[in-house]
Length: 289
Image 1 (cartoon, rainbow, N blue to C red):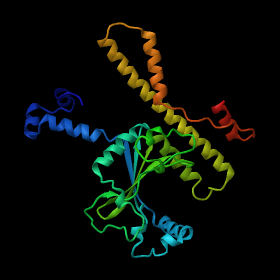
Image 2: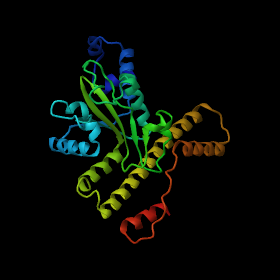
Image 3: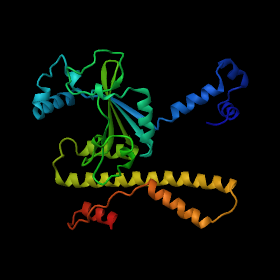
Image 4: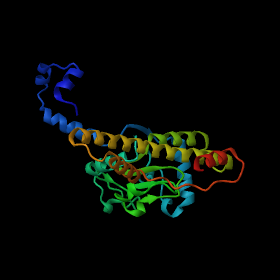
């Protein structure tokens, strides 16, 4: 946080006005730190479309009748946990750790409250806020897992997925809220895929090729963003050392910093080259040659 005098000057607040506010600068510094360390860039909210809700109920009862056979007009809100959604966007993959720590600090996460039976496990206490499911990480095959493995148990990480996102189900004031966390690049791919492919072209091979290619480009973009972020951090550390340390072996410092970048930004596994002549295959081969 910038210094007090700089902030007052920047926002044209006089010392007298600050005194009238009657709050300690240390208190404001704490608020700034607490609020800014959640890692979130921006958010979107939505309430599930009523027509999509009906389609989901039909599909759920068809796919898992045993679990959803008792779902009806009086209790559907106890079965469906995504009627209200909050989508949180982060700039860099590493920012997810900040958000997860922030959420764990604010919301109770106790496995004894995880949903198993939708009716029996529904907590009628509207003042009890907690996570109703284990957080779930959805990633593609080949994506780096290290950032999640250091925080969540292995069964929370679901690979072989088409999209990338981290999901939380929170019970808040008596209702379930689904929180999704993804990068801005992942959100861009998701919106395009949803607009063009979902739900009518999910089985179309040509559309699947192109959306899969765009998804891989999204992963590469996130890797490059993380790389930029790490380079900036190391450069700032280097400049600080130059100011405070005597001259040393500069070439060795550069090698050490390159090693740190490699460790911090694991490279996504390459996919095999394709031998067909589709446009998607040509672009993929250029990317991975």
